[in-house]
Length: 506
Ligand SMILES: Cc1cc2nc3c(=O)[nH]c(=O)nc-3n(C[C@H](O)[C@H](O)[C@H](O)COP(=O)(O)OP(=O)(O)OC[C@H]3O[C@@H](n4cnc5c(N)ncnc54)[C@H](O)[C@@H]3O)c2cc1C
Image 1 (cartoon, rainbow, N blue to C red):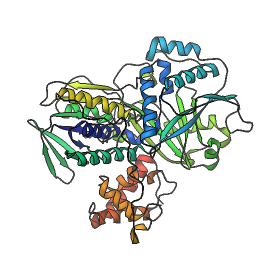
Image 2 (tube, helix red, strand yellow; image 1 turned 135 degrees about the horizontal axis):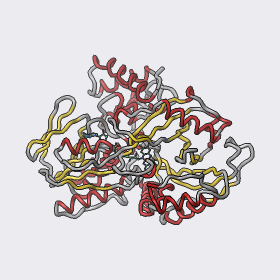
Image 3 (cartoon, rainbow, N blue to C red; image 1 turned 90 degrees about the vertical axis):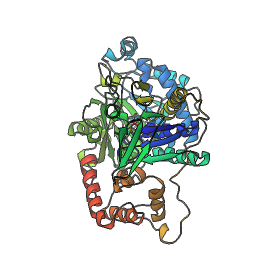
Image 4 (cartoon, rainbow, N blue to C red; image 1 turned 60 degrees about the horizontal axis):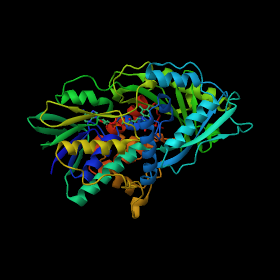
């Protein structure tokens, strides 16, 4: 069997690993941290066609994204759900010339005026028309309800549907769990090495984890799916060439405020900020998720943290839209920031950089090798299918199968439990037995993996130290942690939650 090594276990690496297994390859996934440790955990969590890409006439991207939206709604209902969006507009007219400017000059054009009702209506009509396979309701103009919390100057509202993937982190684990299942059924090699580094030895790759355990592989091909770290790993593996990725940083805030949450109801708001940037105010369980910014960023993506200016910007935007539920810094339960793995190009505004993906082949190494550039949550499956076809063609084979109709399993449903296993971890609704099952089956190595990327406790309104202590105890029971390391693991997690997310532990 031909072995493909995938670097990066974000949503794109995980989708690709699954696709390659289905296509008939052996697969090893290597990540320098945890699953979904990168941008996948820091997005707006939407599965969307990308309404605003229509302004750049990027219809192929929008059409593909809309097809994939429908597919994910059907194949992954445990993770992807329909979500209504409301677009408030101030005027009937406006935005025509800007629309034309963007169509003619693309990313070089800087918009000058706000979009009016008819421009948005036209865009939504086009969006509906491109959504060939959609089962979601079509867009429409809504009557503004008297007394609504929305600022008075928004006299008009439009409604359309997209979808929400509330926890791409869990979706990523589900993709890998499904890849493992498919590999077991077909008798193929499948391994996921997290917290691991790789070095090259001739035509072998040596993978070493943080406990110094090593594995040596002789791959037939490699794919670099390291998202915004793509250029680093390309160079580390010895592939020279021009810079591929020029990330921009985007931040979000999570706010628990009942009046704001009630003002949204079941629908998100998608509005235009005074600087022309799109802003989302999204129902997020009992909370509200607000984003995003778009700033050039050149440092290590792992260090991206929302700045005070970004927090103020997002708070002010929310208050401009919904002055009746004005929020302040004290209402921000947490913030997060991620780096978009966009192609390195010269565009007038960061918002204008294309969101289209590319599969870039590298010459001159011991193996055929590619770097994935760009890609969204929404198109992870399509990018995976396209990449697997490219890789297999190079290896002189055709894919045995693809993922177009394969459901993504709901791996977060509780398994049958008895006795003490049914008791919930303090401060959570997670049964201890289920958490132990997740640790065993979902590549959990550290306390922060559980808190940030499996149980999603990061987003709960309250997070207690006692919860962290009990989770550490379960990690000890499952052999992921020595008892004497538990206190240090808790302290490290508390510090990271504070520094990286502005999140308090009580
Ligand atoms: C602010 C923001 C909002 C967004 N909103 C949306 C949205 O609403 N909908 C949508 O569809 N898309 C959205 N996106 C885009 C989407 O989130 C990303 O394109 C996608 O998550 C990229 O996933 P990835 O797997 O390519 O990269 P990542 O998720 O970054 O994964 C890369 C992985 O590589 C690993 N890695 C790094 N270095 C190495 C190394 N040396 N060796 C091995 N592994 C390594 C990392 O640990 C990480 O796990 C948004 C992005 C941002 C930033």
